[in-house]
Length: 560
Ligand code: HEM
Ligand SMILES: *[C@@H]1O[C@H](CO)[C@@H](O)[C@H](O)[C@H]1NC(C)=O
Image (cartoon, rainbow, N blue to C red; front, top):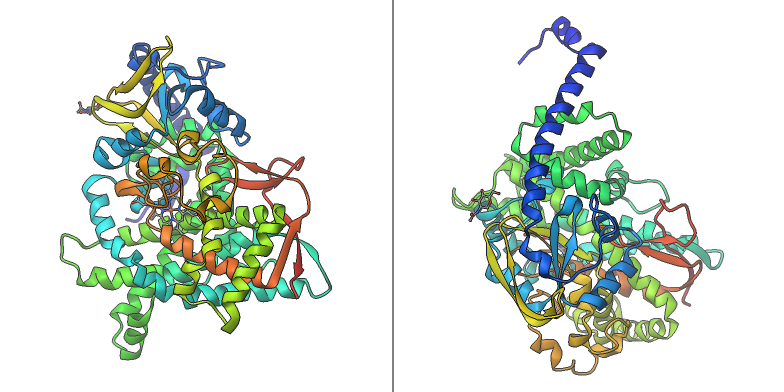
């Protein structure tokens, strides 16, 4: 389509731009008001009103500012202690949300009735296109069917050399820094870059970062690093709830873009830039692979056939798949964008958390180093050795249990009136025991991963404490008896059911490779007091810092 430039210029005078913006805003206000009035009427009669829950500081915002506060730990531990495993939380404008970590309820939400509990995908689809995190129903099932085999143990095993290659580069650069003795190093900076390079190499056979000096990295790194802060916070929760479903309905990229460009906020411009970089990079990666797959040069084809990264395996399988199973190009690009997002900050947060804990617990660090070095006697650890080191496993499990990187799993919306049963009764607002709750079509449900992982009824009175040793003796009966529906280790860190984390084995393995390499060479100790921020993904910051920057300074020294 060609446009007459003169016509275009006239159309875009500042005045017409302002007019358009005003009309759009008015339309949005009318639409939103109608929706709001309808909601308020409905919510005032919600059956959830009988359930107990924290008092709400305001009708306008409810508990949302506390729920999604980056310093919300006390609020979260507090409500779990006061109201137990199922409660009502006040949302915006009188909405009643339902929050739970009851194992039976979670089983219904994530496994048994998973089709009734729809994840909140419009946000993901605006950000990552049609990848796993943003599709529903049959489309999601079809994508999962194609991707599940790609994450099999056999493929993970083959990824080990890629993981070592990246981690050895990390070790070299850190070693060079410590040439002249011990130093304070921002571990989050390096765990983030390493996690991106690992998902780059393991996920799509692409290098984002040579990991050689402090600044030499791909624009993607800066883009994704800025992404989570841009979309975090109560304000964003509201935008997500009201604007994105609208954006989904008008699924014309040009219209969306046009509306987005009209928004006069710097934050929205930044976000668009970030999304552009993310999209363009994914597109380049796929184009290149596709060219190799279709190439007439047998050498290029043979090289493509030997590639062990996730997207290459997927693209090869996709060529052979039947018409109805096959993913479109847009869907494959969607997977690249989704994998980088899902695999980077989560793993980098978990790695940073483990190193921080080891710095706080030098005796655990020494014991772990001992186990690793003894096993390493004859060089790099193989896949089987890595997964069978008991103390390394215990440290990873315990950290992911007490400190899950994702504390509140994405909301689910109930799509049909339904009754949700509990495994343990909770007290309602009148002090009476209730064993189930009636959820009306449209109710938003929030899963507390933190609550599920640290429930004292399941893990015992020391459930909140970080004790790797608990994994070295048989777990209490109450743990298996709870039937927590998580895919990993009786906890909900990677969720469960048909939308559980696909990368949990991948991330286990990369954490173990990185820890085994780093701990054999370096010692980590405390440097400055650090607080962990409860953003969508938990991240560390220096206590008393500027409130914005995320970092984890630790004192590092060479072991020998
Ligand atoms: C410690 C690291 C990680 C944690 C804690 C984590 C956690 C999660 C959680 C909680 C979900 C569910 C989100 C929801 O539906 O509400 C999820 C989904 C997902 N994760 Fe992970 N993840 C981690 C690492 C990874 C890695 C390394 C990859 C990729 C290699 C990955 C790929 C995915 C994908 C593809 C999904 C979407 C699955 C679907 O909707 O079908 N994750 N992850
Ligand atoms: C639930 O509500 C939506 C509209 O909010 C409606 O489209 C849908 O049909 C309802 N589901 C059932 C099972 O009634």
